[in-house]
Image (tube, rainbow over all chains, first blue to last red; front, side, top):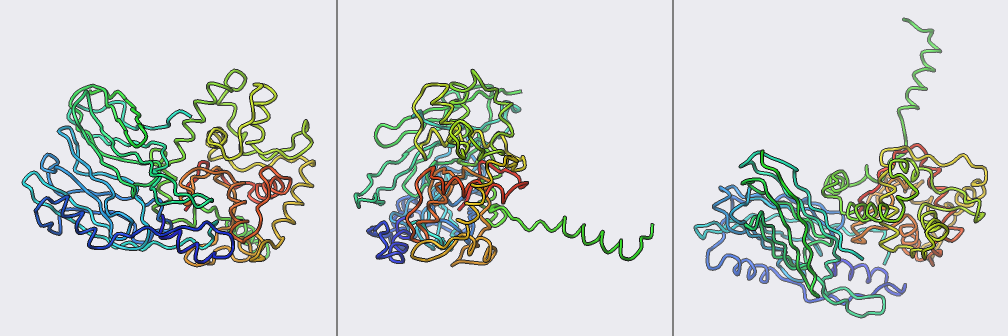
Length: 145
Length: 107
Length: 244
């Protein structure tokens, strides 16, 4: 991701490395706004959502993540993932259809830098639940540039 | 080059059983923030949506953004109603579209 | 049965030496999350390349080659190509076949087509011990490779051996330095967000020490490949690997 590559280009300055311009990074406010859009007026409450993600990540390009919701599957409408410090806060929004078997999803995401990841679930009654995990992304030392 | 995608599902399961589906597709998920060696911005090129239907009925749908890793992977679950065809469709920028299907028998 | 003291001690020493395999695959140095990506074929992104290679093999190669008979082939490369009079790696062998027998153009190094074939063939040998050929014609290349392994390079003036022999297991920044055995190539490297060959990784390491990388399929890179596979002889092939 970009922020990581920017740090690398600073480390490798003067050695002909790939120069990357840092895009406007998302802020906690942008993440809160994205959460607000997903929640549609409801105030997210902590709980009922289990976010499984490594807390120390070797490479932010591919971070496995799993979300499960402690609610009957037919009561869960949508699941979302957002982050605090990526260029944009949204990662993905998942919709469970009538044939969904479990309120659970797994995918792989990108993390530009260390920070918060939040998983949210919207239930049929309109309530929204969330869990946050703070993830440390280490920078690979032997970089190819 | 042909699109490469893999759809993993059990060949059969009991009627009403919950089975896991895993979908993987080759795609760079170019964020639009990276630059090439000449300093030119590589344009955004993403898979935007995935939709899984079983004999036409919705199982699962996903709206993907740039923070989804390259070669997007998604795992979700189907409650098998009967024997039928699971179809997963991906769609994205530049008219990207691909579908994979697999038949699941209900025992 | 009670053994004489010296004999018992000697047997214990032999047993401990046999158990202490000092060589570690890069797999052993990875976090559990990335290990899980490699272990599970339904999650390993490189399986997309394996699937592509399987299709290409069926379309292009199956007229002459039986897929089952290809098990073991990847474990025996690089080899010596008598016709060309030089070391040849598996990708080179695929290209030589394309040119000589299919009368088709060679695939470019690092191309998805070539990587698909190499990954598929490597996958067919998964689990087998790396088995460098006992071919005397490979000796000069292996010796050159051993010298290059110890040769300081680049603005950082580092040799491969300094990191991957002397400091393997220690940390550079936050990362554990692996021993650098090519047990899993081609690999899906998270840093590349795609699959790449051993030569890509070697060239990348050279850029990493701020050296001009050797050309694809140069004598130097092939010598280094031959040396590295000899150094890893007997270790299990893991292709397709996942690495950070």
